[in-house]
Image (cartoon, rainbow, N blue to C red; front, side, top):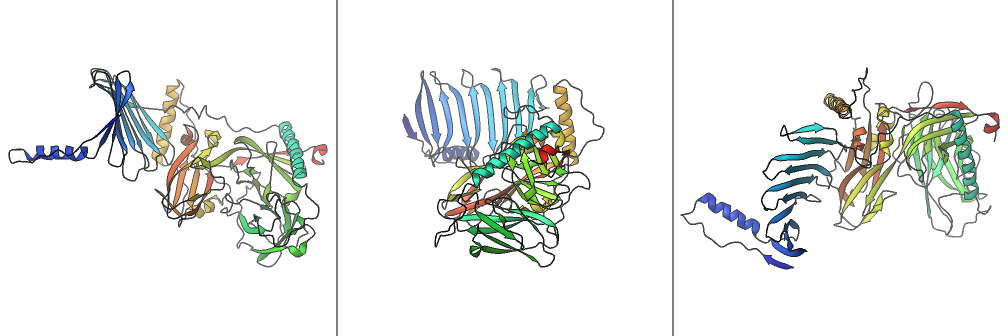
Amino acid sequence: MSTHRTTQAAFLCGPFLFRSLCLIFFAISLIAQNQTVETHDAGGGNKQELVRDASGQVVETRTIDANGKVRSRNTNEYLPGNYVPNTTTTSYYADGKSVENHVTVTYDPSANFTSELAEQFDQAGKHVMGHKLLHDPVTGEFRCWKWNADKQDYQRIVCPSGEESGEKPPPLKSVSEADAIKMFQAARTAAKAEQKSERMVPKNLVLPEETPGQGKFAVVLPAAMIAGKQVSGSVVGDTHYIRLRPELVIQDITLPMPPGSNAAKLSGWRIEVAGSRPQRADAPFTFAVPQSGSQIEIKIYPDGQPEQAIARSVAIPKPPLQSGKPSTGYVAQVMCVIGDVCPIGGGFSGDATAALASFNDKPAKIVAETNDMAFIGVPDDLLYGPKQLLFNEGNELLAFPVVVAQIDVVVDSRHLDEFHSEVKQGDKKLVFAGLVGVQNLPDDDWKAGMFPKSNLEWARRFVPGFEVPRESHSEREEREMMEKLEAQQKGQKSAGKEKEEKLGTIVYFLKNTTTDVASWRGSKDQAFVLPLNPESFQQGDYRYKFVIQANKTGTYAMDAALIPFVAPSRGQKFTLPADVSSR
């Protein structure tokens, strides 16, 4: 390898030179100064030259053949504040002058891909092939054009689907009564096995003296607490998905767990709520909302040791939250997120201790329940994709076809399960905020709607004043045009719908909760609002990148939510046979 540094040419702009020519030479000299060229042997008589700027960044790479002809040239354009450079790649025919291919790729300041222009020429310089691709990183949508050599112009086409996207998902299907009962029986058997395994602890749990608080939990209650009505809640160990949900009331609590205990199980603990009888803390608990008063009193303690109770008071929300349950039938939120809760609406007892829920045959915890809403926890180890959400009370079994998705935030190749990480002052970290499984929601199920109605208030806890994105007239025309174009490319007739349904949207929210520790580049008020539609997943899973700049050393954290503004899933109702419901 050899290295040499170019220097500014020494010359004077005498009166006999044109001023413009002098300025051109002077500009070229300024560009050239402080650049370093490295030459490497590329084998076969070829060599490669790397041009670095004063900061050491590679601004150009040239490949030169054995005849001294330039065969390819790659340039990097470093825009101020951008995380990665824009790139241009040019390849040449054997003469080293005639361009064979030319490709330019651009990115936004946070390294999200925004465009690609690819051109191919014959040796006479005629543009013979190529394509143009534009990408909106916020919505994930792509727009494509293909070069028409005969017309010497770009023509709009439907973008090819990515390898990850595969075929469009089929419509969500109802389930047969026999299959629903079979899955329910399997889920009930699995739930009993899980309870037996988790509750294998000593009957009398003795706390060592001066045990520091180690177990961080939260008592979850429904926000719709009407005097005299039966409701249910639960104790959970993780609230990073549900803590901003308006339908739920969260009361954090720290328990003095003994060393070596499994803090996630809560086996051996009891809870009393609003004067109810002692109930297990590792399962849903139920109580009647007091007829008077503005607070709910909570006590939690080791079994048989009420004197060691930890007490909390929770204010009853006023006025009670409106559930937005359907006037008839049962509905469920069609898009459920792993780690979050999935709401279902209808007519219920409010007693979750006598109910069971599952996704297919996978048992799921009932986090809270009222007389018209139930909030089903989506298990952390559930696989994403289409599922049947089952809910049973008494001899009634409900089944809802839903899609399970996952929020996947990655920083430094590490998945942030609880959306927080450590930084040092001055750090710049690239965050990959992804979604997995949303593309399994069929196009026909992206109908505009909202369930529960509190989803709008939930969104406004991320972004005050948020309004649901609506498909504009121009966007609708664009969508219809592309649907016709897609049908033409497949040799099909366009499906002329008598009445076009309004398209719904699913919004991905991300919010910086530690603005003193770190700031987010390119965000508005330290939050991102990413509205998505079926086209957002044409290339597979959705991904959005942004840069975190650490203001000081510490722990930064974020909130995230996937909020659907689409019509809910309608449920089926089955009656369990006596020999099944009584087991």
